[in-house]
Length: 255
Image 1 (cartoon, rainbow, N blue to C red):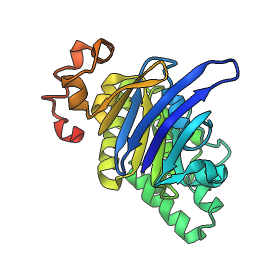
Image 2 (image 1 turned 120 degrees about the vertical axis):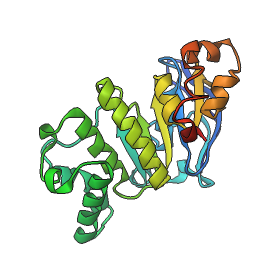
Image 3 (image 1 turned 180 degrees about the vertical axis):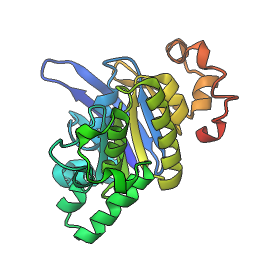
């Protein structure tokens, strides 16, 4: 589905943010990019929708080099959820969610029906929330709307950039559970960025651990925990997580 072929990013000041990334994200996978601040995880993710362009290498989606695609059209085919949510405050929830389908020329009846379906999907009663404004919602509710908006035009790929990190722990836990449930139902291809190893172990089908612009290790959560490649990975995961994946109640989510 998404393939990185020797992708490098060097900025004008000489800083090498990515040092030859090779990675494949298969259709229907939820792949989490994780690592210390400045490791290149967000840069890697933003290259998928060309918010950042590589200096060298190729990124392919379904075998097509995205460098040859119109970036605006590309972004309309990729859902994007960010920490700041980015809902338009002067628009109702319904108008926020339907924005991309409208831009893509969907009929009004079709996108209005889609709004109600998606609000239901993310646990918000459309009869209650569709005509409200973002300021009338809690942070957790706004983030649910952000997820609904990313799904609105039925994109095959969704990028999620630390979407839950600004929320309180209880709300964050609830939305992680919701994401696991959603992914089991909709089977999208998701690239998720986080700095929280607990979150990565919980939600991912595959994890890519990054350091200094390179991918140090990739694998399923159980594999990463049981077989850390080196001391960096072992210390990054932490001993306190070594039992939580292997015998936890969410074991089936990692397979």
